[in-house]
Amino acid sequence: MKKATLYLTALLLLATTPAHACQGKVVGVADGDTITVMHNGRGEKIRLYGVDTPEKKQDFGQRAKQFTSDMACGKIVDVEPIAIDRYGRTVGIVRIGGKRLNEELYSIQPAEAL
Image (cartoon, rainbow, N blue to C red; front, side, top):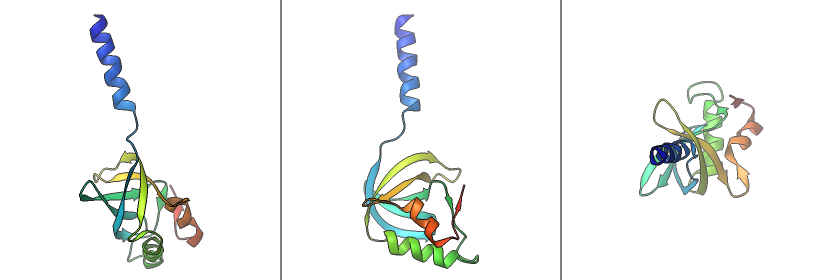
């Protein structure tokens, strides 16, 4: 009984432990709030946590995409995963140097907090 309790406790702790941050190079920008980061030899789609920018064809969509591109494309970033969305993308906080891309997007106004 004690082994079963210990096993279940360990399993619960592992299930609730947040994923570790990863690092990679930004190789693509789908729109203002979604980037592709090379990690472990493959591209991984990252949706910026807490931010919603207009889609490319909406007003300010190209501006948001360009801003994200200018800030991140080709750079090494740190990704702190928060969740996985319904499309299988990692949702996370993206850091470039000492800045959070998620927060920097607010400076151009079309981004909205979720």
